[in-house]
Amino acid sequence: AGAAQPTGAASSAVTVPDPFAALRPAPEHERTPERYLPSPSPDPWYSSPPTVDPATAPGTILATREVTIPPHNVRNFGRGWQVLVQSTDSHDRPQQIVSTLIEPATPWPGPDPRPLVSFNVTIDSLGLTCMPSHTLPHTLNLELPPFLQILADRGYGLVVTDFQGPRAAYAAGRANGRAVLDGIRAARAFVPPGEAGPLFADSRVVQVGYSGGGIATGWAAQLQPVYAPELTGVLVGSSVGGVPSDYSDLFDTMDGTIASGLYRAAVLGLAREYPEMYPLLNATGDVIAHHLRDACAAANTAGGLIPAPLSALTDVDPRTDPTVAAVLARNRLGTPDPAHGADPREVPTGPVQVWHGDAAAPIGPGPGSSRGPGDPFVPEWTARRLADEWCAAGADVEYTPVPGEHILAAYTAVGPALDWVDDRARGVPFDSGCRPD
Image 1 (spheres, rainbow, N blue to C red):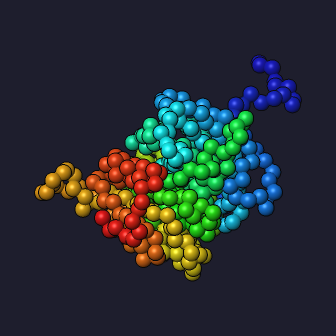
Image 2: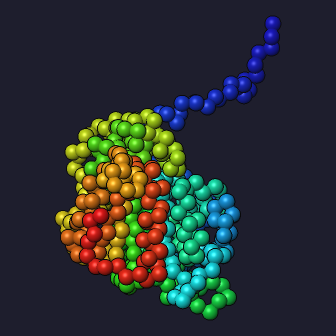
């Protein structure tokens, strides 16, 4: 007979991890906003930010470090720095953001100082390692078409801000726009170590962004007269491309379609600034929001291959729920609505170009050219409405239709958008008023 196991001997049983644990919803008491926030960043500026006096002015530089951008991301990189900058979120609470400053090796011919362009990347992500302060120096920057490279080739100084902030709040327009403006403030004040004065203190400033970057660009233009009034006359142009100005318009064009992955990510990004949306999640929504907490743009885009509508993630109808409606209204770009906390003075002071994939734009030159499909996900009528609303409020706006849907339009707009940026950066006058197209 075998020997009996001694009393108190350790069990030989092995605990096997549950391979489906990540697919199980959390208990109700664990569904806190922290569950849905991004994982800690390897960057200490994100993971261990300094303690800052809450009264510190937005745009104040808190820390500086040199950075090198490899040639596969910017082939004519000259010098670069990253700055940690004081900013504010959607609710006027202080937060810190990171901006990357680039002086390209391409000389600026003058005679005026080298212009500064705020290039607002199409981040469209929920993870902190997706931010440009990480991707530009450390990974392959998958930005296509190569707006950043073209801007560097033209010799502009560049500021590239992680405008989604420390919570990676994709599509949270008010916070995103404030971050862009604070990045511009910091870039204008930055003095390279060992030099006598700022690089860009006397530079004309222009900004450009597409899609998610267009959200940040449009909001920076709209918030500037109230949030950063000292930039009036300094921010001489804003080129806003492919911007979804009212997310409620997209229930019929993105939700439940092949574009639903990005729409889902945008709503989850908004919830990071407006956590009152989290209790609306059902068990499926809890799992999805937790699983996507670090997703970058490519994964969010691919998520549309499973075109689940938002209604599958909640037990309410997001089209009619008052909590959702209030958040979307608060982040509607265009006519400022005081009923949702907007300041009537939130109207762009510098010239604005609104460009968009538009079925009215001919594909080729000459009369009789065929026309493209327009943008099926962010319809062109929403961009035309934004231009009209800004015009009616007194802004100087040019609407530029370009051929193609949402992806192709980014390519067909390279010429007209960056030439418009170049005119503003070089001081070419912009006739006041509105230019419908």
